[in-house]
Length: 252
Image 1 (spheres, one colour):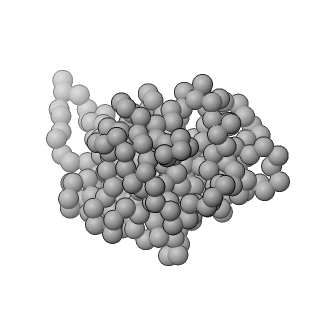
Image 2 (image 1 turned 30 degrees about the vertical axis):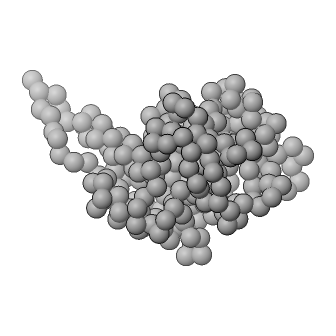
């Protein structure tokens, strides 16, 4: 027996929801637009970072079809944000991390894959001697800039272009001197600004694992989802369809 019934994807929105964080207020608009314009229906659940570690430990987070770690750092729980990233990475669940989500995706990879147990985020640990995520030389709050995409990357395929003008709202980013080790362990840095600084990371071999220092949810007025958000939503729906298909008994 097979089914072609449409699947609704359950998506975990991990972050400390606030009406003062613009990206958080954009999410409902984006979800509506994805459903109406693209037929990508996402059933979204907000999970505060303070609850995310327990949700991951119980297996509840692994039952979602996608995980989006949203901006809004410093998070109430660094542990919770990292647990959400780790669950998506290890379980093959489509993942999107934007701004703080990008920073914590790199932090989780450094600790969980590269063995850098002491890798730190300077916003969470200002006294860290050698943080992986450090204060930017120039703040990117309110900044717009070009991002150039690596040919053949997930980001380039999703965007359908070699470069894009993107919006930022952050004060922290990766220390470039620490990134070669992450690349050696399999993380691909697939987007850079015009000065060569990393702005996108992805994980080859994963169904969909993409993290951006910029905030694609801030593109336009929210009525037309950014291509990277749309690609993430499509991956979530594909995951849901595969889950539904796996639950249907085989014909005898």
